[in-house]
Image 1 (cartoon, helix red, strand yellow):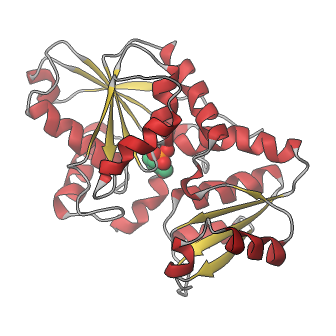
Image 2 (cartoon, protein in one colour; image 1 turned 90 degrees about the horizontal axis):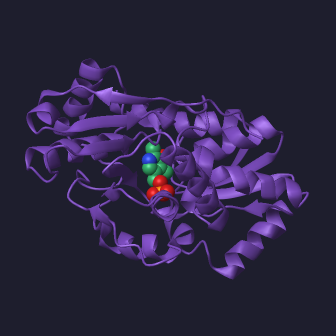
Image 3 (cartoon, helix red, strand yellow; image 1 turned 45 degrees about the vertical axis):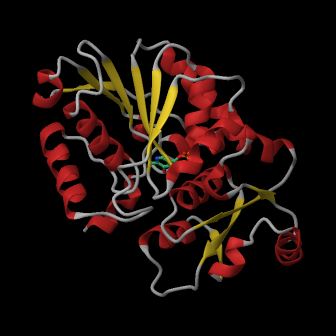
Length: 293
Ligand SMILES: *Cc1c(COP(=O)(O)O)cnc(C)c1O
């Protein structure tokens, strides 16, 4: 089992939320583990149990050069004494960036493939070639979303529900797996997902795929992508800096910064009725902050 650290829910004192008559909180799930942080911990939990149950000793997964999922998978494998292989999108660029450098330092074997090959990575003949090259392994999809990942997030959701009641639960969205698991596990609040990528319209279908029944208490905001996945703007970077100096809470530029920016914009636009209690999930990803420097 991976180590797990309990995490607090903290109230954010801000003039904007107070003027709107709202209370805003943040769940610091980024603090649940020093390296396998946030939602990735929960998405990996039952997959790691499955690897051990199957008697496999190697995890193989996929990601871009800045992937939090590759980073977390490498650290989790290292902690549990498993081998790991990362299939990385694009040509190898040396020196490695800090994400890949870290993954490699955790023992992850990095295998770079062209963007064309990567796009076709679920093609059975490509997967066969990976088995021929690397031998037996347990495969996790890009971003780590599969049925066992959803199960882990559901467990997080049940735990969260015991802590307090909220009218809204906000979270950043990449593949939609985390959002789906939480919707399955928690009834009561409305869920607002913030797409970290441009053209996030398809995410509705991605989330729906994993839902256990016809929930309709959720929506995905697609206007806060700041140019696309992994892209930032000065206004986003300034916002993250201001938020950290006001609240002492670091956000990352890929996911949580965009979500929090979006929440403040929606508060200003009076989307939330006065008296609402809003919970923002800090899903981690702080390793990506080196890109802001
Ligand atoms: C991976 C990640 C997400 C996206 O999670 P999905 O389950 O793919 O939607 C959100 N926030 C952070 C910090 C992440 O690393």
